[in-house]
Length: 113
Image (cartoon, rainbow, N blue to C red; front, side, top):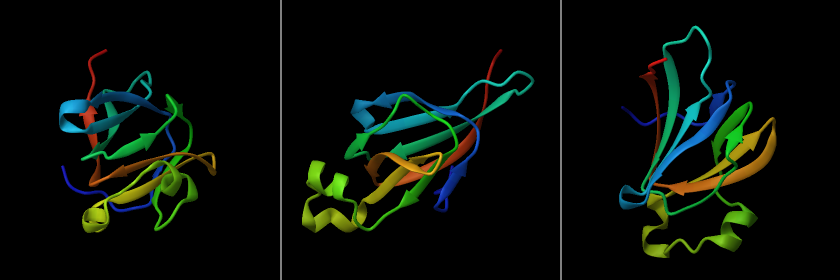
């Protein structure tokens, strides 16, 4: 799995799949679609903060340098600030949450029907 270039445009529906507190890892997964044996997963690693919906349609994940909502809710320590991505989540073009994390990766995973 490698770092994914931003912005990410995910036209299929995505849902929050898991969050592992011990590893600070958030995973979104595409909705199951009949006839497909894989699903798209977006993995956010070293998550410092997040505000998400349970599901998204037409999701775009883009990096922003500054976002009033992130700045208001998250105190990123200055010495390590450059290590974190500030990612804005857009659903159908409208800002719909954020993730502050160390990296974001996309992969296809096999699903069992």
